Image (cartoon, rainbow, N blue to C red; front, side, top):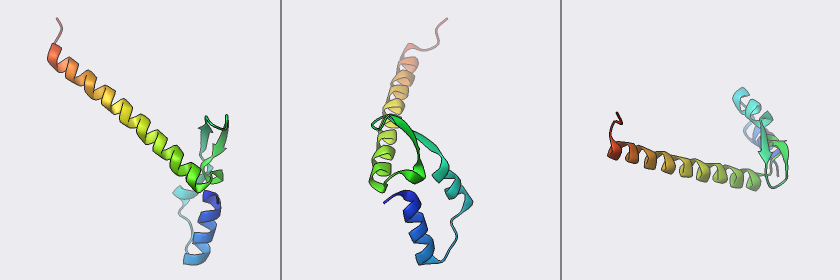
Length: 81
């Protein structure tokens, strides 16, 4: 089931309109390395979206860890004249 389908079902069940920022997000394109093509978030299967998001978070964590290490090195070295 895609995110677009889930949103439509949610609209019917709740009777509420989808916020415009969510609709815009669903149109946002994402490059899928595993599929080798660009797809919209709305066309993603729910589990695929969760896995893709988890991958992005892991990459952000790795980048944050590297940045923290660089900050520690800079602190140890102090100002370089």
